[in-house]
Length: 494
Length: 143
Image (cartoon, rainbow over all chains, first blue to last red):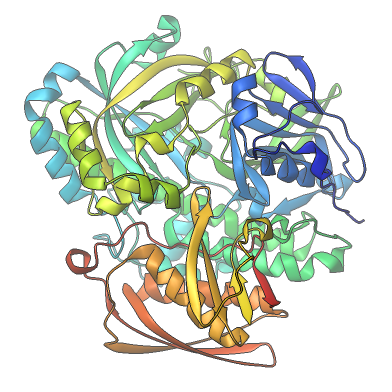
């Protein structure tokens, strides 16, 4: 099998760098389809309104087109409304591969922060409960949640515990006392990714993780205390346990150094070995291996171990948050609404042309969004669908969506994952001062706690696109429906 | 003159020839691109390492400790990424920042020496942590 470059000609690109839409067939207000040509095996389908697609970098279509050339891809190369320029795959990219059709698994298609994701916890408190103690709560969370460059956690794993963590995920964390048993049913895979193979994780990756459990990291990772500002769907909100002015805690982070090390090591190996499998890579960051190959199997085993690392890490951070809240609000009981990843490759059964097929679904910066009735959902959520947790920026808020039944036919039950950047870190750093942003947000009632004012500048609210437009487009496209909008009260960042 | 960069070739501002060893950053969406110039690949890689440290901190890093690294790759592009990832690894596990670098390349094998100090958040005011270096478009070429 071979792949050639499906790179579209330069004439497809707009002069301003934004995407030229004239080559697409617009199927409806939020669905844009590019028919296969050249080496493309399937169409590219972008879900976005006209404004969002026009503002997407033209490299998004180059990358989505490259993905469409990979062996064994099924039905389409999809881009979510928050799609932007990534590495190999676009961020916001979704692609499913059939191992029986020569399908591949791609380290770049999963992303480097393997199983980066979002957890939202209900507090049972109201905004009015929080406000009198907002500053003390912010300071305490900031002290208790290790974040930023050079930070280490309070947990050090020896070799045996490292293996146990990589096998057990959040279940391991709960067994060690960092979390509650009841949390597990609200975590994807019930908190433990099966078929993880810690023996395929390198010593270097394990070494990077040894002192990083229970740490938030830096960049766009955060822990936020949020108030529910608006309810869109009261029926689903009732099932989720949220109401206007109720308070939730949301954590965004992933598999820390371990995931990055695994991703980097396998990317190099897949680049070097791709030609042995007859794969010609249109972009080296699209490095991949057949699912049914020795490299592919090893990557999948290591990637699943990294998923467990991320699930364990978010469980521990949730436990820390619980501890702080219990100090200030002894009556508060933090319960997990849901914990979902947006950088993964999962084996799932999907209906394709009338047949149930087992596929390897890559979601890179895209959230799984199962609709009502899906058997993997907890019984309490099954009637309405899966919570889809969307991070915005520290100034503009976030959203809780719910999986839509239509999403299965749209993009293998997938939705967006965030706002997407409007400005690079480099540009943000030139434009904003971290100190000034902290002061401005404080004046709006949002307390930022970060060891790095430079990091705050890089994550300035203005550096992100309008998350409201992204989720509205996702809803219009049938990917997921809006349930609630959240506004930040406290944001702890690395 | 050699230039190494971790970003798409299309973003190179190549109208001005480089006049000596130097480095710079450039925008790359959620990440920051690094570019190093030198009269040899080794020199360009040393410069790119300075750019990498400057992603994390603008402060001067004192050369208090020495760390040796080695890596190999079938071509210079991959070697460039391996080199930066080796530095990132040492930053992560030693919780150090590095400010001086030497590189020797022989038959696809790189031997490097890093000099630096433990992270002092108050003194160096680090920004985001460097987690990995991407392959996307690293270019090694002569000018």
